[in-house]
Image 1: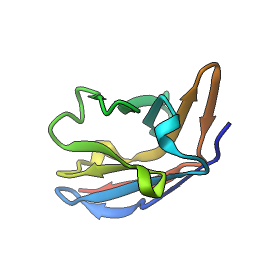
Image 2: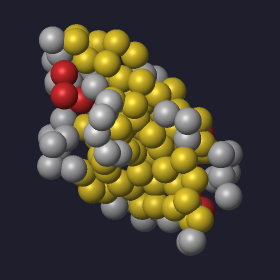
Image 3: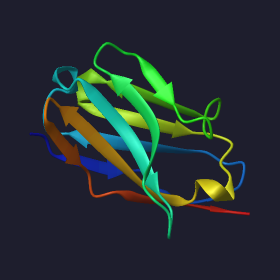
Image 4: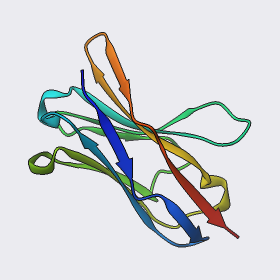
Length: 115
């Protein structure tokens, strides 16, 4: 099991940037898969980006070329760099860790993009 704490959300104008952080309570090198999800009001939670312990990454089509997921093992932190933000990126962003059969979620951080 692992505890996850997200930070870095806020209010930004369209075209701006934010960097979200997900701090884990254990060495993230030992976590096979970490992901960022988001949930907008009235919508289902959707996968945004994935990073594996081997460094492989994957992105939702809606964020490809704008968002970058990365990890810094020394700080047990996964980041989501979000550039060229759009109003439709407004959502609560959640970090998720998958360790075998166990799934852990953070509490979420709000991102609001104004037009």
